[in-house]
Image (cartoon, rainbow, N blue to C red):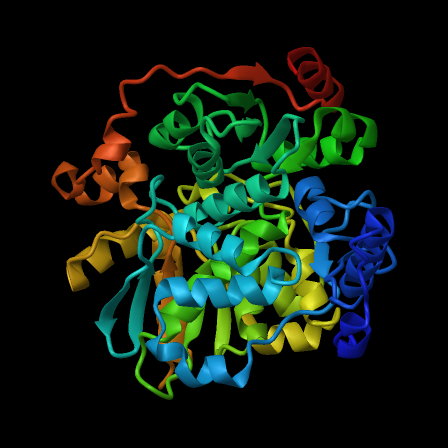
Length: 472
């Protein structure tokens, strides 16, 4: 859209002697200028004609047709950025990406503050061999990659709701790490209350304490079902428009676009640490596929990427689709890499949208691999033996996929995303490596003796709805 005509600005006259006319002219001028600033709109993956602004997309999270929001046009970082990207700091990369996605709706100064207060920890690259790297994403407050998205989202939501007296109710379903990251990010944030739904008996003990032992404005619901059941309850709450409006609901799952954009930061940050000219293959332990979708967003921004590998456990719905072209969601099964126990990944529709619905295009850029618990346990022991490195069950699935990819494609350089600190899975780690291999960070250890406080619920939506209404 062309800029405002300078003549129209300079010819505007404000008469001191006529304040009412001056105010009227000023309002007209501001209106004209605003009309010439491009505004990014967001559409539903199910219905491109359903379009909303940033505030609606982030705070309402889910379109009424049960699709997911995507920007009308995906940004591309300009040539000047890609000339200097290897010399930029993590914060500078984050600011550039955030500006590319949200800059038309959020002032630069506000975005810089959001990035600076979110990225208070690094994502270092660990090298096993010149072609074999691990990206550690567990250095945040809850020791999981979800900290990047949760902290950014909490701050962006606070900016979007500034001056709003209504209480914001944050709903989140978790298969392990999301809930802890969201709880930490929103703990005692004024004007917010957080409800975390997690599957009974299907998260580790320390993960559960991160969800249930904080108190304050955090409430945990222990659902007698699977993660997919938890996710279905959250989605049903948003599709109940009366409930959503009355309780001012928003989601902190990766169905919310504000979770994905900050995860694109570390893909660029990781790739810049490789030698000049090396295009990495990113190997992503995958459950709900938000993390891999964030990598696709980074690629769309212009990041040179050779390929993506979706590494899963027995819940291999997407790898099966990539092999056969048939997408068949099914109930999830429990594994030792519990954060990936998802049978109907939400972000699959975003992945399809990014490839124009083409199976051929998607499988040319993404490959899928799946591994059993027995293979995962063996990988934990092997990584320790070969590299003296303690890797968690999710990272171990990724490491297996990276090794298999390099064997099939000699000359490839892989970056495996290590998504959680191994200390969060003590039963598995001690069983495979012994107690001496487990160094538990203090911020996790202090939760061990705290009391678990959770409300038990079934998977019936009417019961969940009644609880929300009665409680809030």
